Structure formats: structure tokens, C-alpha cells
Image (cartoon, rainbow, N blue to C red; front, side, top):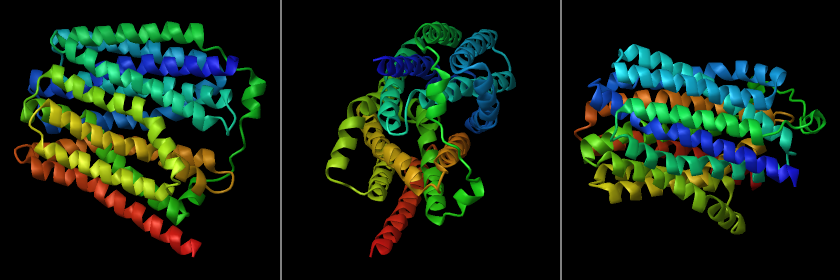
Length: 398
């Protein structure tokens, strides 16, 4: 079927895109902190800048996607990233100043939204609302296939000059450009129009819903914590625990493989036992807290991998439940804007989180219990928020 072929092609495009990015992203803090001797609190300023670009760029990306076309903008995003990674390769080779890296990484993050927004629009064009969760799961698995392989390849490349790592990432981005152009055909406009519903809600009407607002705030705290996985954890694992970069790549791959192999079975199991969505969120937050706090007791690769497995199980439970709850709590005709608001909350959390984490790391890297105790408390507070939602839901039922 053409529909299934197109969704599979989109999942493969996401896999290539995430493979390219995940090769280098986990190792950027290590390069800047350990290779260039830049303090962690300074390194941490890069991530809010990248997050700011991710927040500001989507309106431009969406405007261009609607006017130029989905496939072209996906290709433009990938090819632009290829060019920017080549510039980063040159900067690494020349040992360029930190501020130049920060500027190019910020632009790179913003340009990355061109592919993401166009791909999300392509998915919307391709599916009906009823089909979307199933296809979304396929895309999520494709994305995490890339995230599973990328860090392992990155760990191997981290033995070489970092300029080579950036150059190979650029080559993969170009490969993704050609694949997208060849395999992701534009969806006829008639299908696109049929799949779209007018969204007349406002952000204010969404935020006036106290339960939805509580959900978004709790989610923000989880996104703050999630961002530590590819920022603070990389420097902590190599600098404090003392694992090699090869081992670190394997540890990160645990995250991707856990999602690939557990996402559908766990979701199906929770559906079968009819676990309430708010209870899923609470359970997932508990696993987040347990996984991140257990990092304080890690002494090597096996224990780090186990901790990452536990916290990723939390992600496996939380992400579909979060998607479902936001859809359910959205005001009439406001699902689209509610999802966009969730995306904004995620972007801000992922932007601010590494900066907060780097400040905590700078102060408490020598006392892991305090370091991960502070950071895992975000999940504890989020869990309390989810618990109050559960209590309110029971009271409404009674």
C-alpha cells in the first residue's frame, strides 16, 4: 500500500536524520570540556542558545513548509545541516574560539526544525486522526533506531579527531537529503486537506484548563530531567565514573534499544490491564526518579547501562501517556494547539535543563548523591503533580 510505503519511508528518513545527529550530540560536552578545557558552566550556555533557536525557528519553518512543500523543506533542513556540520569540522580542526562553536551550533539547532516541522506536516498529510498514533509509533521506532546506532558509531569516532566526527555527520546528513528526495513523495493536496481540521482554540483557553496546565508543568519538569541524559551524563560518566568513550557510546545505545524493543510491548501490556493514563504518568515519573538517582551509585559501564535502562522505561511509559492525556484534556477543537503547546514546553525544558544541570554539576560533581538527588527531584515533583491529577480524576468520577 502506498500509504504504508510512505510512512515507512518517513520512518527511515527519521532514522537517518537521528543517526547523523546522535553520532556527535552526546560528545559535544566532552569535546568542549575535556578537549578544549572549557568549564562546564560555560559549556552549559550552549544548550539554552540551541533551545532558543528550536523555539523561535518553527514558525518560520511552518510558514515555508506550507508554501514551498514538505519534501523540499525536509531536504533543505538536512542539506543545510550538512553544510553547518562541515563548518563545525573546520572550526574543530582550527581550534576556533568557543563563541564561534556556540553560534554555529545554535544555527544548526534552528535549521534542524526545518526537517522536523516538514516531517510532522508530511505525517499529518499522510494520515487520518485515527491512523496517526499507529504511524507515530512507527516514526518513534525509526527515530530510535538511529539513536541506538549513532552513539556507538560516535564512540568509535571519538578516538579520532573531532573534526572527522563532524565531517562524517555531514556526509550522513547529505545521504539523508538524497534518500528523502528519492523516497518521500509529496502527498496529494486533496489528502492533506481532508486530514486537517480547523483549530479555533487559543493558548489562553488551553492554559485556563487547570488539569491540562498541571499536566504541562509536570511534563516541563520531566523534560528538564530528560535533557541531562545527553548533557551532564556524558561528562559525569567519563569524568567522574571514569568510563571510556567507547563504553559511553554503548550506554547511550541502551536508551535507543530499550525504546525499540519495549515501546510497543509495554504500551500493549498497559492497555491490556487498562491502567489509567494518569497512573501511567505517575509510574513513569517514579522510574525516571529511580533511574536518574541511581546514577549516583554507578561505578562502571554495566551500572550506568542499568540506570539508563530504568530511566528509559520511564520514558517508554510516559511519552504515549502524555500524548494521550494532552489530546484528551484539550479544549473542543484545540488538539492541534494543545500539542503545539506541549512541543513548546518540551523545547523550553530541553533548552533550560542542560544549563541548570551544568550549574549543579559544577557545584556538586564531587558529591554524586547531591548532584543526582537535586536533578532527580524534578521527577519526584512531577510525580506529585501527576498524583494530584489522579486524585482529581477519581473525585470527578465519584
